[in-house]
Length: 631
Image 1 (spheres, helix red, strand yellow):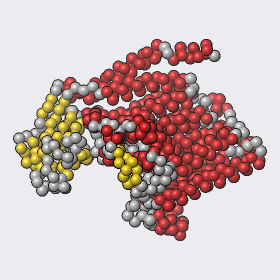
Image 2: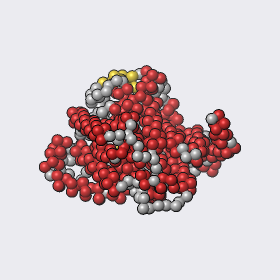
Image 3: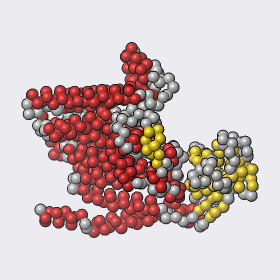
Image 4: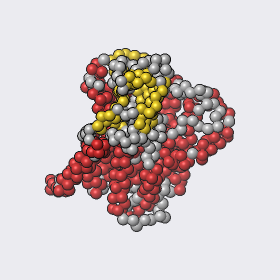
């Protein structure tokens, strides 16, 4: 045993590891220096006031621009042609508490909205930009004086250095476990690094409805298990700062992040107040928020600032999702590379790196399903421990979103040989059916009492909408069919490509990503796995799976139709492609067919999968997070 451990350590700690560390260090140095300093290398230190070619609602006073009193809006058109600068400083020269709101568009790009932060904003200037148009929202008729500077200077980006150095080392360690066929450890290591990196680097409220979920988790961390709108919760004084980071109004480069973080100290934790809060997440049970509430609870014990509270909530979700994925991959009897690739999708890192429960719910879904596949495909007798894993996992999923209750049907994949006796099969079937039914009824009942229509959209009434569905079932069925058929291409493009408020995954990456997933679903089995007919689902099992998926898709759409869509509408509002993510894994498990045998070299498939995971994760971090917010 000791000799085997010594050989394992020797195979890991070798010259390749040293080379991987050195190459990662070199890459990190290049990325920390080059991308953000191109303007500096071209023109050196630069600090100029660009000329204004058009001014509306401003009066120029000694190079500064005074807002005209009584003006509701004002515009400055700035000439950037020929100025080799990387950053545009917009400074409020009047040191007042009033923070001017403005939008800016470079050349023909879409205008982005901002609010002054610490009386200034530091914006990255796109390369070869010719002009910028700044529009001021002065609807409150306040006065202010702006100065505008275009600058270039040398900076060493510590965030880029850290991410690229550690990612190189992490990929080396991950590849080591992949070669040893330890797919569970490979996924865990990659997930934890990129997931926690996403959780920390993703600006506040860039997650879908993140602020609402964060408030719910805050209340749970305080011991309020049945939060209702209007309940008083002890919150940090600066919690409203997080809510100001809406859409594109957050920091947009390394300098602004550093300036923002410098304003946060432990003092904003000690200044806490008991205030009534409202959240659109109040209708959810507390169970899905347990993990992020644990993170917040730890943060409370450590007296961290409000940003760290959010980070700890996110990191707790990442850890919970990574652990569920780890055991799910370990349990899955075949096509492990398929599940590894699904678990490491950028959209999963995005969902896991935000406050909410989508990723953790999917982790438990994978865990329950793989336990069923493990028992079914290995022809094992179901043990009490395995039954509890299935029951607890599926209960968590239903408590998170009751519309996924049809996962109960997956239990019918278990056959009579998976039970020690007919009596035990009946007992288990009745118990889990009653359990999941009661959980679904309780979850729906709780949401109904709190109020399903938390968004309070115009024309939305859940009671009237339910009455409309029940009295017009065929008409509503037609609405469902038409909606999904009309949006098939949209769902394909966005189920893995849409990243909420972040820049989306490139269409070319999305295409090859989908292609690889389909390939792994059909051919991603080892030669040994292909020889065992038990590893393939038969026709009746495929039928059960497809029927369950159709039911889940229909119920998730119906939930949005009731809570987010005007009564009697002929379409469904608010439906997002991420709601279909739980359908992907079981659906793809149906694609492998024992009549389709492949003689592809499995080691080659494994290396291609590893290379693709490297490409798509680095692309996600660079294109969707680092460039928009830290360069």
